[in-house]
Image (tube, rainbow, N blue to C red):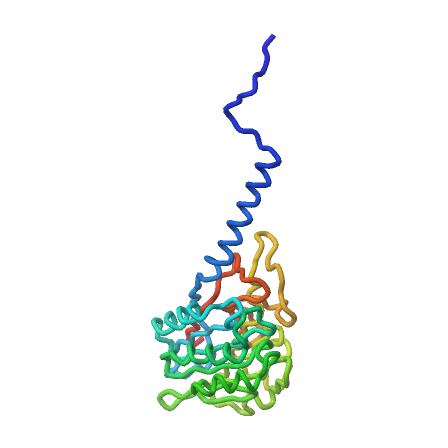
Length: 291
């Protein structure tokens, strides 16, 4: 009769070993999500085909960032790193689609300081033009404070306004809506009879459905949003862990709503927890091209 002998050279998986291994794995994931993934900037190239695009704007390059959230979990050095990346890419225009600061920030630096520090770093952008809109956190902290900080460094904030971006006698129209938590008015934001393509900045992406239903929504070629953070933490085979109101339908990347294209940037900051997982901070380069 043969007897199976236990190989004492192979360690058994005890409860203590399992707990220790699980703890080390969790700590490793937390370190990766909090210190590595949160600082890995993903530069996304997005080609945007627009009907009747003036030839002067063929290959016109727009850098978009969003949801900076200085400085609860976005350190000034990281925003400086993003600004340096943008400058190295030399876009024609930079657009920031809201949330410069964080409501109820857990840091010891007050919101007033964070707003002015954020504006000072953004003032180092070298693109010919930079424009911004407000996000819900900016409004919750203080819209006048954030607007004042940005404008003090000559960065325009569009609040239910549109401006022409001109090149070689042609133009496109850049529009910026007020945040959804305040008083967005598309009647003021979008020109009545635009003589060129229309680009709209609106912080909350799910309001794209309201845009296309508005009488002037038919003029919008491209809407740029942020707000959702892409979910910030995305679980394999499950998707985003948490999504904010008005950022649950259109979460990240490209969408087509009839004539209008929508792009949702994942943002560079974090809210709630200082983690990103399978959802890197994003710097988008939109290149305009004719259909």
